[in-house]
Length: 164
Length: 209
Image (cartoon, rainbow over the protein chains, first blue to last red):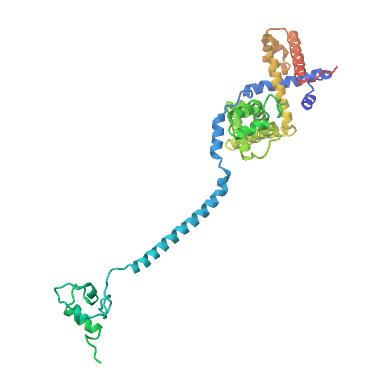
């Protein structure tokens, strides 16, 4: 406080006229300050200002958490892709084992065709269903063991009797 | 001089700042009660002509200073503020200078030169004043304001003619006040003496014998 007062010399009675002038200058400044509204309070929405600051501020963990989140997303996506690919391969393998569709081989032989067994005992003609044990000889898959099946049997199994 | 550390009955500035950071509006109002006049006075010192020409200028700049103060407290919550008054004084001064430069940049060259010269003079005059001295100057003005409010009606009318009195136009002032020139001179001297005694009593300074 002494610095300003000493420089102004207001309270020094030895220089009456000078300090009167300094005091008058201070009063003149006071008038200007008063007219400019310095002594009026600043209107401020304290709550709004503090709420805005709070909404703008982000938690500190979010700053480094974003990087971890990105890494986790990359790992997660890779896991999903590999899982899908693995399942597709797994499904393909299982479908090969459980395959029930019967398709003929390029050479015309039935996939279930065989030569073991007694063909003649299974031969039952076009109107009768083949026995389960004889289905091996049902080369054309029409349900019976007929002459057509015999022709195929002869071709695949080198005839009914093999010549010595 | 505003104290940054209040008495034990009032919370300290540091406590209030921490409360502001946590979102306490009452703490911000308390800080404004303590330092709003200082902020406004600092803005006035830098941009006097703008304040006198535009009644909203001072309010706008002061609001920006307080908004910036809150942002600064939040951004540097881990740093303590040594002196809130010094910080606000610097912020008010810098913000006023920035606003003046932005405003004068959009105006004509003639007004730009006058504003620039006024700003240069103000800044050069303020360079010798520390924030604490600015605060002391404001305190003097507040004491004067309180003292003048205690004057009677006749003395207040005399103070209204301060412009003529400072120019020593005693005759013209006395005619307007409808009193003799000698009476006016005597009463004016009495006013100044009472103000000096009041200032001395409130600040603790003693008269030299």
